[in-house]
Length: 341
Ligand SMILES: [Zn+2]
Ligand SMILES: [Zn+2]
Image 1 (cartoon, rainbow, N blue to C red):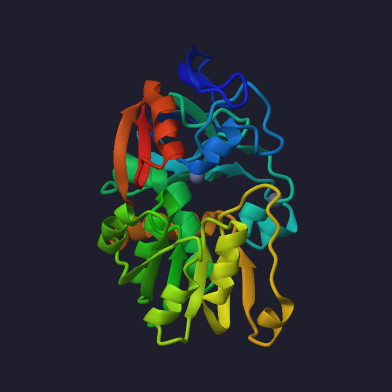
Image 2: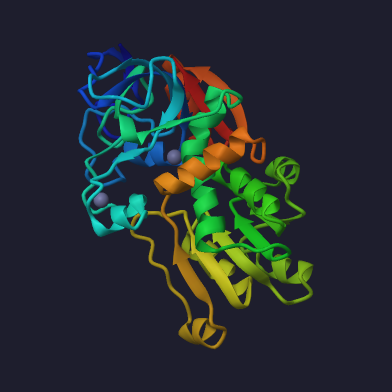
């Protein structure tokens, strides 16, 4: 099969012929129909994500159709459409048992993080990690649902537990995850303030449901949020960027009792806060890491019911993976791009 292979960190993937995987007894063989291009892919390509061996095939936002099934597979059939959950988890650790599968302490493999990912034509997936999607959900939307949409959903709905009428600030609202976060917060009934450093992204954020926008400058964005809320601040800030300056501004933009959710991450960036600012205002700080199997099932059902509509802006053939990554690196890509084999 064709795959886009990275043989050295900080170099672009190249079209390579690699063996087509064969399904084990409990696995299904998936013919990939679409693979999302994510900021994490750039981090992996550049060697910034630990424990990822070379050579590697990127891509953890994958949708496809079942081409063959192993002898023990009973639920999934040839021709079924769906997305692999991005991890094959142990199923036995306390996090798996508690349903917090993105925290599994003994993950067996992660697609696109060493294990061959979506920048290819086929994958094998254990049956229980293949999540069916409804007939009305196109492959490109299903693919991006499995990372950018579920990540936003977990951060806003499961971690921050956003309630109707609350002011929610999305930092990095114009990015691939940000636009989905705006849509989910608006769907939850929040008053959504979109923050970004690039005002060209605001029309898209508004289209996704943002009620107001704040341009982040060198001075941050807290003042803009306070101005829009009569000095009160936001109930929830979701920081998808998480640099030292955005995290400081995020804290300053919160009302007393507010919740900060950190989703973005950069290696070696510490999270610092002036302790009395957190203590006397009873600020709650959450980390939110991708999503559980349950989150994924809920999001796929919402998309199928038409309650969420993942935004896919561009589609390129698999061979143009380098171009898609480059457009993401330069900020030219707005919203998500998918690759199609
Ligand atoms: Zn991703
Ligand atoms: Zn586990």
